[in-house]
Every structure is written in C-alpha cells, then in structure tokens.
Image (cartoon, rainbow over the protein chains, first blue to last red):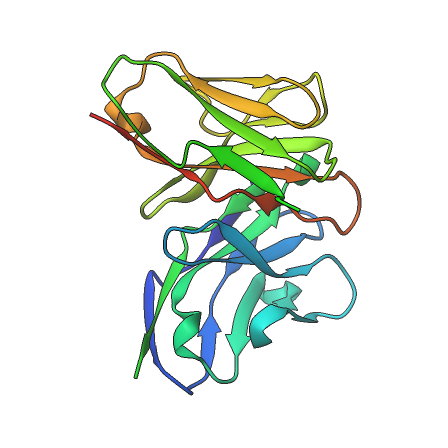
Length: 112
Length: 113
C-alpha cells in the first residue's frame, strides 16, 4: 500500500532563512506527488505537483520541490522564509481515481 | 467562482445524534471525496465518488454513509455520532485525467460530546 512519511512534526525557521521540508513516499509505480499548505482554520491549498518530466518543480509562493526516485523523496524547499509561511504542510501521493494518501504533516513556525 | 463549498463550518453534536455534512462544487468535476483530519494523522479518506451515481469506501468508512446526490453535490452522513468522530472534515473534488489536482473545501469542524 502507498504511504507517505513526513519525519518532522515541527520545524522552526528564522525569517529570511532557507527551508527544507522532508517527504518520503512508498509507491510501486511512478508517483504523482503533491505538496499542500494549510493555514490555521483554513482548507488545503496546492503548492505544487509532480507528474512526470523535470524533477525540479516550481510552485506558488516561491516554493519548489525536487523528486528523487532513488531516494523515494519529494522534499519541499524555499530559499527565504517569510512570516506568512507559518502553516502546516502536507505531502501526498495519488492513488487511483485521484485519491490522495497524505503524510502526517509538518508544522512550520517562523521566528523573527 | 466558489470552488468547493462545505456546510456547516462548525457543529457540535451529542453522542448518538445524526447529521449530514453537505458539499457542493461548481467546477463540473466528476470525482468527489470526503476526508477527515485528526491531529498527528494527516488526512484520511472516508469515501469517494469517482463519478455521479457511484460511491466507494476509503480508508476509514466505518460509521459513515455518503450520497452522491448529483454531479455537484456529495453529502456525508453520520447516523449515530460517536466521540471518535470528532474531527475536521474536508470535501474535495477533481476531474479524472492526467495532470489534474484535487480542490478542497474550507472544512467542517465537528465535535461530538
């Protein structure tokens, strides 16, 4: 069965510093991978997605992610974090019929 | 363009009460989904509807029923609410095909006391 692991429950980053959130997946075929962000009390917003092709994908709000098949990873990065990036981030892999299997999430805290 | 709309946004139920969570999408998507979100567990799929007239169980269907009323609407019913069903519920929709994504509603926060 497909699974997604986000090993970091919480991460604290200083404003202006770089960010990397880790995501590892378990999937037999070529995965469709997603990163979503959830601000407090809000729904999920898609940051970026990987289906095929270039392994470095660009998303909204200055985020990017790199698909590494050899490591079964799809880590999310941002070169300079802003206070407004504080939120919870979810990595997900798609099953059939666009059903998503989510990781447990990483809560990002941004310190001044 | 409202996207995916869920009602209500908040609800408190007593154990044993029933209620229906409503979801409607205006993107003409064929597929719709219900997820629940619990602390430390991410989102888990309860039920989904690949197309109008079909529904299937997801990972955690026990205690729930669904109805795909038409292409726009997909409701989730709790027949006899239990405290274990305290959660945030998200509805989503998508269009089957390559390079597509799911769109989520704002969620319904349900507390069962």
